[in-house]
Structures are given as C-alpha cells and as structure tokens.
Image 1 (cartoon, rainbow, N blue to C red):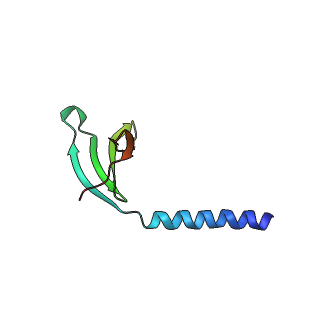
Image 2 (cartoon, helix red, strand yellow):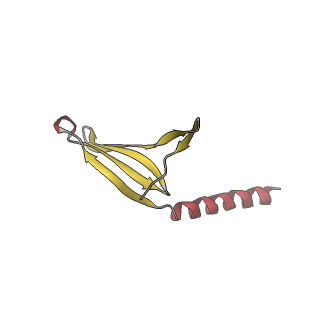
Image 3 (tube, rainbow, N blue to C red):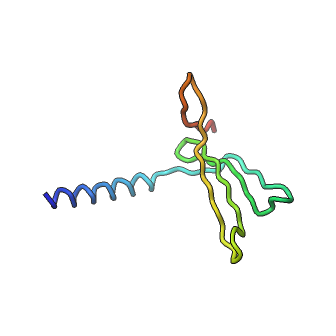
Length: 88
C-alpha cells in the first residue's frame, strides 16, 4: 500500500512539473505608472492563451525588494464567468 502511495506522489510531481515546462507566457500590453507611481509597473500577460493582469511594485520595503500581484482576467458570457482568452 505504501508503494502505491509513494508512486502516486511521484507521478503527481512529475506530471505537475511537465505541465509547467510547456507554459507559454508572453506580454500583450504594458503601461508605466504616473509620477506618483513611478515604481509601479502594470501589464497584461498572455499565459497559456489566457490573459493575466500583473502589477509589480519596486522598493516595497526599506531594503528594496518587490511585490508582485498576478490576477487572471475574467469576463461574463451568457451569464457565466469565464477566463479571458488572448486574441493575438
């Protein structure tokens, strides 16, 4: 029983890592912040055919560093919420 459990864990790790290797990420839009937000960078990325809004804030703490936020964009279609697909 333990062998099957271990085999299952190994298969999940291998299959999960294979899926990550084939992810396609490309930038579709980019816009820099205004004078008050000079360290904030917003952009829309295309990840595996779906749009993701990304915000990066540099100098988030005293010693430097950065904060990154990724949000998958969604839209309403026929009363259902579905992910936005890249058109390019």
